[in-house]
Image 1 (cartoon, rainbow, N blue to C red):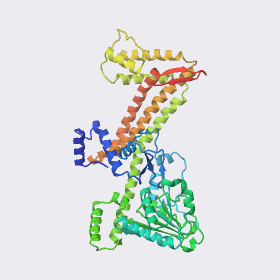
Image 2 (image 1 turned 120 degrees about the vertical axis):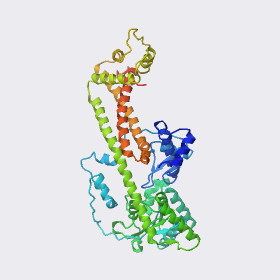
Image 3 (image 1 turned 30 degrees about the vertical axis):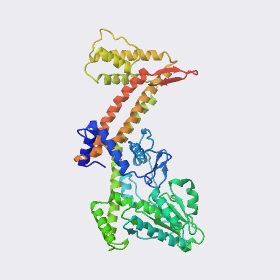
Image 4 (image 1 turned 180 degrees about the horizontal axis):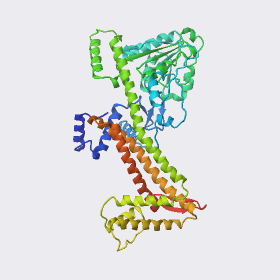
Length: 532
């Protein structure tokens, strides 16, 4: 999402900045974007729950709690601020990989699912895998009815509940599916008002999932659930249920096609009878998030007709059904484009990740790191000296105390303050400091262990910062599309520049680790290193 022209002007006026899109104001824009996403896209009960003063994410595919998982890039903290709970520290990503890249590491990959036939083009394009349809062991006799469409949420729910109560009285088990935890609680309240005993399966009572699923196929059982209902299991039918028509799945919201197929597939398994019926309203969140101006205009006209009593409650117009199908197709296409964009961004990360682990492997496998340490120190000194063209004695003294040694160092009076002389002096100073550290150690093996620890710590620390920067960069480059520039290209350029900067920063941190660290031997003569 992004700000309109008027929004940009208001933001610049409020924060008293001249240009919201220049480099100095990028962080302000990022926080604005995070705040808008937290308030307008992240919904309590749908995307997350607030439990015991903490924001806990919900898995959108099955409605389960994702304990210990946070949205990075600061969005999690923005949601915490929105809910007025304690703001936690922003976690840093030490490593990141997409599923296509992960699966690409294996020589052979395969998988099985009951709902991927409709996405076979994406599987061949992304994974280079063909989708082969295998017939079921027994014929599927489940009846999947066309969705029933209503104008308002209340009308939809009332008709869905009436249908469920009718089937319940006939002795059939019912699986009532809600699109979110919040809606499952609403449906539960409505069933209680009707005096219908039922179980609720959502993120609040996941501990009872096995017991609830076990009883979901018994005669007259009513189960209200989110998308998590019985995934990966068969809901066993109780005595006499097959003769009455089997399990009835009743969906109460418009859902993505694959999720809809997965839920319908809860019934009619292993050749059992069953049915699925989905109820949709034009106020469903899935529709509201993706509707166009034309669709909203049509909705307002229908509301006006309903107010005048000039239309039936169930909407049967082919135009409405076609509009909903087009909306669903548009959302699906958008999700495919989003995954393609993610994979495109992953290319830069994959190249950098491969190169980083090569550098790391060299350090791990090198038994003599003296030459490598010398190269890193030389490059680090160059980077320090490149920060300015002219150096005074006081500036050199400050540089030494900040990055080389905390001890007082007397700078020679005859030192020439040109680039070559300064570098030579600092290299000799590094040699003297390392020789002094070596006196503490027993042998060259411990010295090599110290070298490896210092270099790896510097490299790993900078790599963690680099991964986090690349995650943030995805948000930063998106506004470039408004000016006709390709965000993917901008991302690749800035990612390459940041990797070179990361290597320079790693060299400078290695200087700090090698020279400012404290080393000692414990009682077992084992090396103990403390970095600042």
